[in-house]
Length: 573
Image (cartoon, rainbow, N blue to C red; front, side):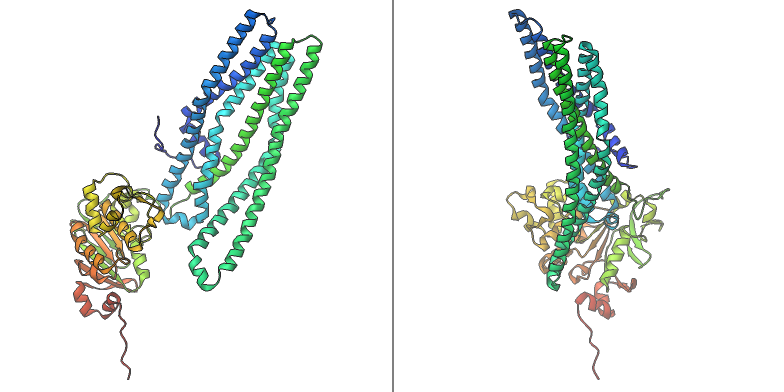
């Protein structure tokens, strides 16, 4: 038994064909094994036809009949025994190719981060993870029948050549001609599938945007207009699907027509040879069976070509994701990482997050908070790490992105909560004990989430944890961020949706939890700011004041207005 998924490796994304070839190289033992099993099975069907013909030509006495009956029984048993492992190998090939594709796409998507959504519409990404992996998996699942069909063709040609040279030559010439006969259909089919696939991605994007903005659309009365536009685009997708269906139907017709013509021709020619006495009745019956096997083999080969076209279109979409360049790529010559304690610094705003302190950052404009957190997390250029001992500043852009992600965690309220067990959501790598999980949940004041389900840590979350309130979801995000225990943690409004009692509890527990490490609280919550070691006030993108929370409330009216959410009214004359 092999566990899936396996380490995916580095994909070759120079083209769709190279990507499919890379998948073939990664799974060649399983593909070879499936091909051998399928070839063995198709060989038994060919040998069965030969055995039946030999039985008819044996004289039909008791001894020969019993002998050939035993041979036929053995062939049938072998064929039956080969069916289960063949099917299992085919299923494994589907899962291996599809899961490997999912792994490389998800890994690249995680590396790209916001770059992905800026470069590709959401529908394109969704379609890759839902439709394209199926097409790639289908091709590799049925690839075993390519080997099986080739074994069948070769076996039939050899048996016919040994019985009648002309018959064998007919097979050797007819099969390539039949395969060439479908070539004119392949390019239009590929072109129409690509067009239909693109239309589907566009429609998926519009559907996701429509769902996300439905409440706003209803508020402004625009749902009917958008609905009509969606209906028009869905009709275009339907029309594109119909065009693909027509071309696929034409290919299906050719898959039936060409082998059928071959079958009629061989039977007609074989019947004439039998009447002329050049072949026996048993050979004629065997040739009929051979021709049936040959027709099935040709159909499988033609169907495999159709599957390859679909897989190639899907692989092209996968390659498009894998080939995207990051907006902030890794440096060619990375800088030496910091040693010892270090903090964060944003030179553009002047914000500093020193090691071993809980630093509050208050922004008069919420847009500044978004920009600062983006720079501190290397989602935008500008942030740097600062060694406490030496004062050496190392730009985040000079470090590999994975190294930055390991050292610095920016936790926002847009972070996704995935479906699955609660313990796996809080500690995806499974490296935390229940005692540690309980501690981070306590710091995040999320104990009620654990008590809510009798399953405790094994409670199953739905997508985005929709069964919980907004405040509970926010506290789960905070607990997950704390469980990662990064060297530098940037929390953006971590308690904006919770009640005052829970917010105060979070503020009281957070400092002890993050003792000795750099932590930034980008927030306007007075309950959290009251627990910070130092506060920096940002206005118009720059620090204009800093100090203790209570001192700033007294000395900075704008700070007090931002934190206490009050409006200073000018006196009327």
